[in-house]
Length: 499
Image 1 (spheres, rainbow, N blue to C red):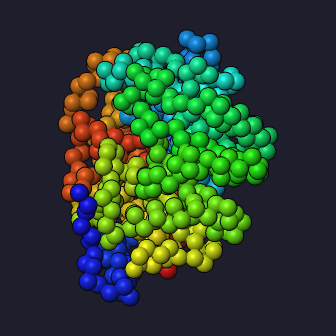
Image 2: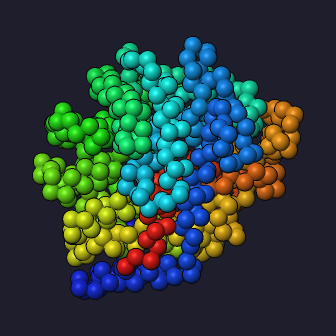
Image 3: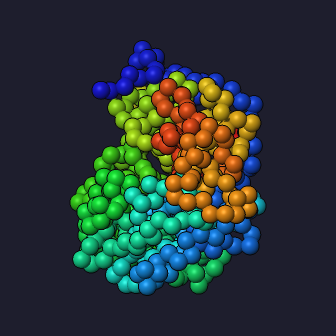
């Protein structure tokens, strides 16, 4: 059922854009201003709370300790390190790779405005790529998960005490996974750009590995949720197919290497791999809008007319997201939050807002706008829509609550996160077993350990939020919520008062 437009069709075309801006600006005026630099610092610090493996001396979240040091040993490989995806203790390769791609894109496009936090953002990228290099060290194999999700989700224990199954799962020639392999190639290629000048040798290693992993993904095509259905579903099941990840991987390899083979792959496979599908989706499972925005930069720079259709797709995506334009898959709450169906809504908010901001910058440099029927979407308008979403997350909402832990005076205290909710090793040195942690899960008390910077799944379409661990869809943080937010906060920390 199509959602009714928030703006009356009787409004004249000449005033439509102005009315939309007034609505957005007035709803942003709830708060006098935000400390985006502080929010940026905290959004990056969150990734330190998600670290697995041997923690470094400069670890800032001190309540965390080393964990899962023997990951991979059952398969004769070293798979220590990487990130836990959310409030559990499993390492899922698909969302981890997407997180790494988005952290890299954040640094590539917005690193120059991150100030002293750029070093920490680059460190967050490297923590992901160091693991992905381990996971792709054997040619023709990608290790895509460590930990049995069913065993893990049957316990409530901090990662330092884990005694659940640390099973290792992989894709190979006989059991393909073009989706997770394509995303891994994208992550490695994007990160190679981040390290091109900072660490040239590491950058070359990342690009070489991305090339190899992409070739494997393309040659042995298939969805990893077909090969590993009972392992990855319903947790990170590929509902959208692997085709978009092949285009996504090729797009990042083209950007990183400038090799014609990837340009030709994109042009040749645009229709076959359905580049224009589901244009207003972007996240760990669906890369379509991201592909179109990423590739469109070259078109807007006047360098790639052969990619013109991707820019047309990107323009359609922009129009489908704007408040005031009806679209059956996009809503805005009364408080101004972008809402899409499915769990963990903030993942859509941050990812789609990132694309709006990135595209607005590309348009600005090219001195272009997006025609959306009677509305002309200027770069300034796109930035305002993105900023409104960021401000909602930071507290400009009907509840007056920041959805980032540790930012502002009021924020979620009972997040769905094992390490945060169970007493730390320093506070409780004795082991806390699988079922012993249940009392902390069920407790009405605030979490004892502050997972600084964590952004939770967030409120529903009525702007309601239960600050309660059992409501995991709304109270659980994830790495792929925070990764795009790093770029957004990087920009607004310097451009908070732009016109």
